[in-house]
Amino acid sequence: MTRLTSCPDAASVADRAAAQVRTVIEQARAERGVAHVALSGGGTPERTYRLLGEDAEALRGTEVWFADERCVGPDDPESNYRMAYETLLGPAGIPSQLVHRMRGELGPAAGARSYESELRERLGGEPGEPVMLDLVLLGIGPDGHVASLFPGSATLAEEHALCLGVENSPKPPPGRITLTLPVLRAARGCLLVAVGASKSDALAATLGEPSESVPASLLRRERLTVITDDAAAPPAPNRR
Image 1: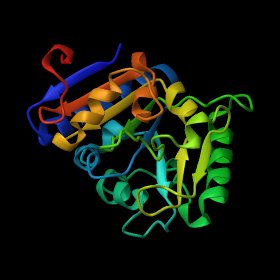
Image 2: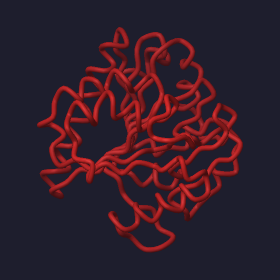
Image 3: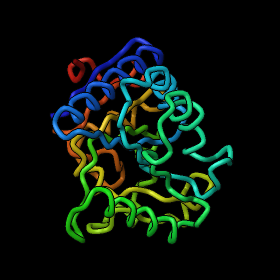
Image 4: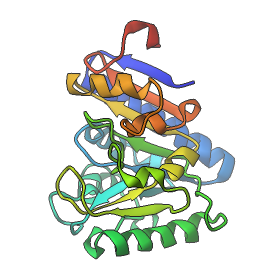
């Protein structure tokens, strides 16, 4: 069952989310010697990244992946990697060899193939089976999209690939690279962070019946943790 926590404001959400990430990393390191964590872009996770960036020891040995990326270079203002580097990776001093960025400058198709190879090489698994990340940190759009998996998209039907290129994203830029739904569902945990009244309908739909019209609703509920502020939170009976 989904764990949902409501906090009074965005700062409290970031505090709680950062604490959750630290807990997952500590547990993964204790059990397997390393933690594999995937980051998302967008404004919502940025506060959490800044807090994590202040705690280098908590991130020691963590291998960092990405849930999606825009097809731009790593120095572009639109780059998810750039935002993560400026707020978390750089301040925490995470070694470059532990950071696996999606190469958006290659374009959607080539970038997706490159990242799939890197995931498979590092995390193993049989061809056609998803790899297992320890945690994927996700934001959610007002339309219910997560990573670059958008409502009604053909990418939601993918069963075997680890990564896909997106040519016609409804949000600019149109070219993107994204982890697939099977990878998100196979992760040991997904942490979904939602802030603001504009996310309230999408979050309520996420906790309702699974539907391709709300990609976030297709995540595995028993492995999903939601941290939200009061403005985005569903009705009180669903909170904890």
